[in-house]
Length: 178
Image (cartoon, rainbow, N blue to C red):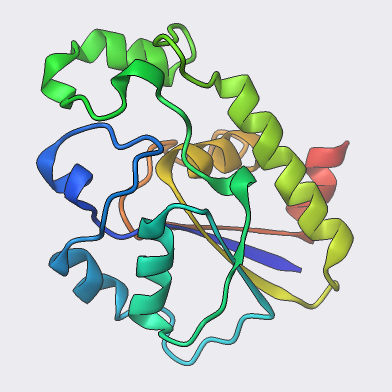
């Protein structure tokens, strides 16, 4: 099995420089145009999206008739009181501490909590799909960072750009389970 994780297209929050967290925000016109070029002629056996509209808008930009399975476990990391705040209002060292798991804004989800729900989702995928299935998961930077922490063995940058993909397969999952 192969699971391709895709971070959503550029959003108004990305463009305007604020933490969206679990706020619903739309993808921009630029994001839509860039996403519409993805995965030409690709076939997926199953498609999953987070419940936030930016993931389904990204998916429908390149696959307008897709009917994804919505799964809360692949939603964005909860950034607590930072949600909706402009990044320039928070010091860069504090943001780095948050991303490194050394600081938690009030009400935010910890890295270990995010990793646990992503791990649970990935385990369910390998338990419930066939070995030859090709799965697409449209998700967020926080969830994609978890996937990379869990499966990349430190070989990839952890931050993800809009529309970045990261793929894992059965061998990655077997190594992870050990």
